[in-house]
Length: 472
Ligand SMILES: *[C@@H]1O[C@H](CO)[C@@H](O)[C@H](O)[C@H]1NC(C)=O
Ligand SMILES: *[C@@H]1O[C@H](CO)[C@@H](O)[C@H](O)[C@H]1NC(C)=O
Image 1 (cartoon, helix red, strand yellow):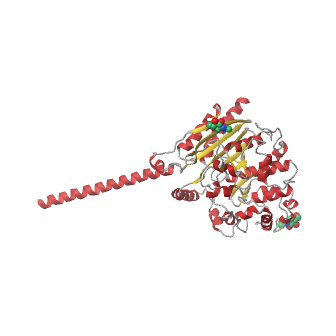
Image 2 (cartoon, rainbow, N blue to C red):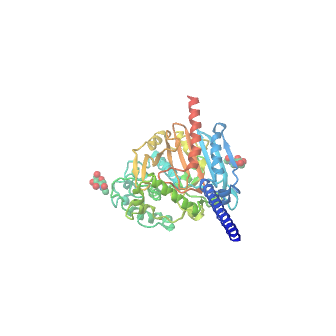
Image 3 (cartoon, rainbow, N blue to C red):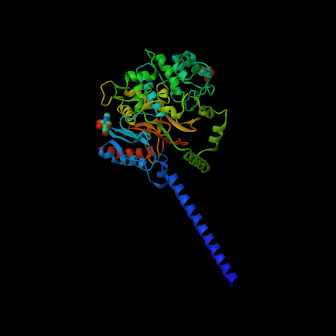
């Protein structure tokens, strides 16, 4: 009896232990799953306790102006903050020549609690290429440059290494075979442009002279700058011409040469955490697994002889984290280190949509004539890009025709920048759009921008379509 009872007791004890262990571990697994789920479904820029438990989230106060018709744009913009996808950012929209959205929110410097406001400036990486391409069109318009001329007409030493037939049109459209340089560029190279021009000229064509598109991510601005120095009567760089002839005259802030006293206005940049980066890699793996990313993309990426591999090698003097520093922002690099805000990008786009006519500025001189705007907007045939590893539809002036999820029927002209910034316009709908943010999301294969941009842009397009319909 005693024995049995003990046995029963022990059995009971064992049973309840096993059960409670089972329940505890189940509860633990469930709890961990909920945390992981919370974590991966929430934005990467919220504090950890907010990502996991939705406590201690950043405030989501938004400042600025929105026209009543465009209120849904503000709602979409706020959602990005609420969901932890923003640290600080700004979005601006012009519609038919009027500023209809000019919103800012979050922090320019999270640690110092400096607000991201209408005084904030920030690096926009490759959105800088839109500004540089507009300046090339500006010089084409004034007769200093011709897209169809060979680069060697302006720069005889350029005609080496199978580059003798490369035209300005090839160069602005990333098909000059110059997506990388064989030598690593240092900061002192960018400070001695005469010497640097020799390095640039000596680089051989990476497709042996055959025109092939391969995104000149870091290089295009260096080449354009040398050409501009040679055709400008005062031998100025693109950045210097912008400072002398564009910014005050057209009421814009877009610096290729940042005045040093403006450094305190520049937002600090933030990247996602290492753990987030790992989740992101799972996502890449998943996209490959379901066939969204072709196998050949990875083999190209790892093939040391491929143009893509060579282009992605670190080639410039600065790391991403350097891009809020004076050192980095006061040497000119017209591919990537422009400093601006959403409003200036949208306003410059609006001047293009307005056929070059200024908007609320001290000058009455058109920025670029309508005929040159038509020329630079001309659609070129869709073509495969060997670096971005996807098809691109170029607009002659060095922009691209872009489509976005949920609004695929509308094509924008422009480009975007590393981390998510965007500088685009659509002439038919009368929209121009600028978006700048200091929370940098990793680029995704085949995508232009990310969900923050898409959700806000979609509302802009919906309202503009509705207004156009009412006007008709
Ligand atoms: C910037 O924002 C402040 C505060 O909201 C406002 O007083 C000021 O007019 C704004 N400046 C411009 C140029 O919009
Ligand atoms: C440049 O064009 C000329 C004339 O069409 C051609 O003979 C030459 O092979 C071309 N050069 C290169 C590097 O493709």
